[in-house]
Length: 203
Image (cartoon, rainbow, N blue to C red; front, top):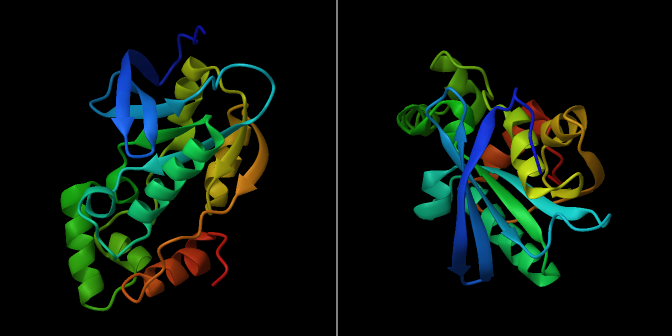
């Protein structure tokens, strides 16, 4: 599928990626005029037919996704999303390199230190001089276009993701809650996301 000249990312290459959940196709994207690279993991014929595709927009979280941190729910959500897609045999995870809600890994560590001192996740970002959430989900327009996806069931607790998808012309047929991994180390973090960032959680 062709993409417009005003695209934010471009597709570079794709390969097979065997995982414990199944053999996905790994798609590499690079930002146009920017340094960041992003990936999508797709399974099955995601661009075929009118049946909505199960997807997740997942922002990079090195500490949660790779280092098994219990301070957030990110790693748990990534694993649950891949498992859900594998069960359906069709879907995609768009993995966006927007660490720490966009502030980067080192600033995220600085924010964690402030949280160790009593700040919540929003206060810590703001004390470092950043907005509560700097992520830009508009770039998924071009990634979804490359995959041929126009109708989705999106796994998220974040209403911003649903709003962005709708604004960029993606039909959101269903929001699928993804509440996993709550524990004593991230309970305040999740409660703050619900109270201050509008995440739709059961509490």
